[in-house]
Structures are given as structure tokens and as C-alpha cells.
Length: 193
Image (cartoon, rainbow, N blue to C red):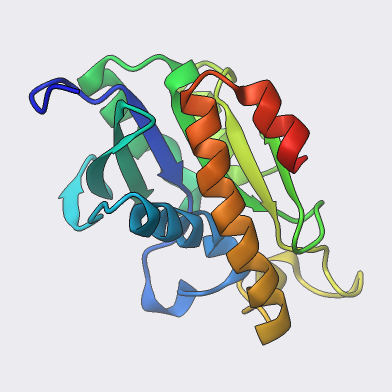
């Protein structure tokens, strides 16, 4: 990889920037991005494209890790800016986010599809006009009872037992990102879905 070559892939962890959102279920994408950054020796400490960003090499490709600071519902603004700047097609933008329809400790990889009710993903699909983004959905569990407000649930913190499961999911997400960049999305699905 030539160090002057342009970014070829975006790996985007969805979350919210305020301190109060740190370590909440809804910040699962950010937490996964932190784990990926650590694994690949990437410092996500610059501010660009309305995001915290850092560059590294994954599977021989130049990758920009992004943690949009636009708040979840406007994640598409950050992603579109970076895609347009580097002329990156949707197929090379891997989005990682929380999913309430999956139990904690479960992960689902898709090569494309609908937003599944996730507002950050909805923003990305709407602003790019494409749903052809590979995505890694990490389970945060359903509301413990129907009376709970959904916003309160996704903004709650993991128990220590749940967090141990999540750390494993973040490691799996890093492996899945490698496989997707290598063009082995089906293998990643077989391994982790």
C-alpha cells in the first residue's frame, strides 16, 4: 500500500458524541470502532467529515475509521461527505451499529438491505440514495418489558456480564471487517451470523 494512496474503505461505527452516551447500548458502533482501531493500531483522533477519524491498513487496503459526531439520526451527513471526498462506492462502506432485534452477544452481517428501523442507517441510506452498504449489526437486546420507553432502553448501559459478551462481539466485528475488505462477506456471514 502506497502511503499516498487514497482511502479505499470507510468503516463507520454509529453512535452519539456526548459524555452521557458513553458505554450505552446505542453507542455500540462507536465501541466496536474503538476495538477495531486498537486491533489495527489506528488512532481515531482527528476531526474531519463531522466525525472522529483515523486511517490504517486492514487486509492491505487503506481504511478510514469513522465515528460520526452528528448524532445518530444524522449519521448520513458524515458518511456522504467522506464518500464524496474519496469517491468511495457504497459497497466499500462498512457500517457498524446496534440492533434491538438481536440478543446481546449476537451479531448479524448483511451485504445490503433496509435500515431495519435503525435511524442512523436510515439517514445513510436516505442521503446516499443507496442501500448497498455492508453492515454489521450487533445485538443490544430487546426492551426488558413492553412498558419501557425505547429511547430509555437504548440509552441504558450494559451490565458487566453483558459487556463481557459485547467485547467478544467487538472482536468478531474486527474479524468480519477484515473478511469483508478481502471480498469474503459470505464467509463473514457464515462465521458470525
